[in-house]
Amino acid sequence: MDVNLRKTLAHVAEFYDQRKVGERGALGFRRSSDLKTLADCAGILLRHGIIIPGKTLFLDLGCADGRVNVILSYLVRLSAGIELDDWTLDEYGQLRALLEDELDGLGLPVPPENIRLFNGDSSGEEIYEAIKNETGAGFEDFDLFYTYLVMHEEFAELIRAKGKAGAIFMVYGVDRIIPRYGGLRLLALSPLAGSIAVYRKE
Image 1: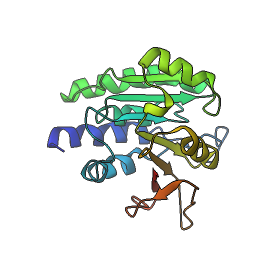
Image 2 (image 1 turned 60 degrees about the horizontal axis):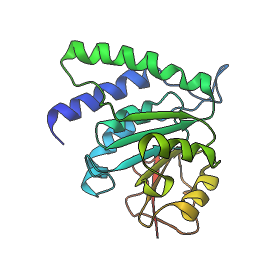
Image 3 (image 1 turned 90 degrees about the horizontal axis):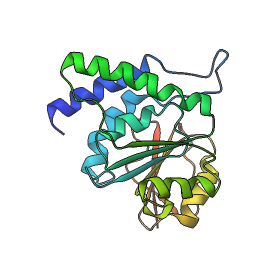
Image 4 (image 1 turned 135 degrees about the vertical axis):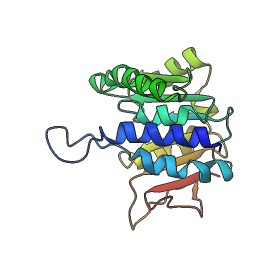
């Protein structure tokens, strides 16, 4: 990873982590991934072939305001996300505009135009038809799936049943006990940064 990309990812992470939503307060149910953790793990994901620059198709199964999609957009061919709550998804555009202003001011590249976010239910069928109609990629075409530790068992089963062989499932928010899923093999590099479990569909 070149120095400019590393610097860009670090700034994107800092931008969103300053706006991190945790488990307290009125919006405590909205849990945000720590993007610094993801940025720090990017080199590992690249070295292990989890992400192949310009080729990997990425899908966040609960993307909220799209922050994970933004940081991974620099590394993948397509960065798609699904969010059930439209009011949460609505924050994406405003935050992206603020981020782009900051990046422009620093002479750093803005996120690529490969981000596609969808309002819908990740456990349903209809949303995947909408994604395929817009992007050309069906569920079975995605290489890398991501979720916070919410509905992880349901999503693991969905990937086992419909994902392609070799598809990767990343689960953020694991602790001392790392879940296991039928049909998905926990990779030895888990847990990344103590927080991310990485699985491959057999």
